[in-house]
Image (cartoon, rainbow, N blue to C red; front, side, top):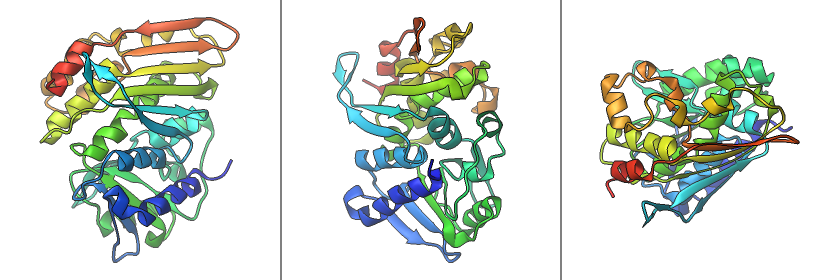
Length: 310
């Protein structure tokens, strides 16, 4: 398979070529790295969010919007499909790179993680990328600078001029769209955490409602997580049976039924203090090839509606 960083670069080039149409901005730092503002100072939008989600998955997922409802109110949803879930969702889309410098804090996702390949998921999948370019998407309140670009370049053993940094705020249109595309990643990661071989997940089809844009980070991060944990629906096609499928949806968590604003507040907004089993989609169908089909969990549209302020 072609390098996921190279495939992502084709999408990055598309964002640069159609920056005006996407309401995004691209500029070069002194180091030579390229920053793409998908929704920090730039307005962004639904098309920008869909393209960003495709970049985050290394070009290995199809991402679209679809009509949907939440408590009978028309609310658009994001639909994602991939036939390469281990690579697209775990080795690329997952926000597994905590970016912290003296001047910047953010979460990194995207194919540049596979150039470093030090996380546990890369050992389990046996995947590591090799490419002369790196793309790391950053969820942050501000745009990255040369310090971030140089950090990424050093970690990926590249020159800064080969680094591309799409960035977005959680509380942006782009952020709401791109984060709604994570239901499939949450299900695949949860299943891997339970001990299932991620390479035995063959296809993922997922959808979740797009949260209304909040006016502050805390409300935005609570809404986008509520959209996934209480409104996300995922279908998995897998190769092997497993005796812990019932632990896969968010309904298996003791925290199920509480809005994330309360869950995060109780943890003093320290995400590491939040039980990991609540970070899962609300409902999951697991189709074992040649075997049983399990339908697990349930959505809570009332909670999502309240979270969205409907």
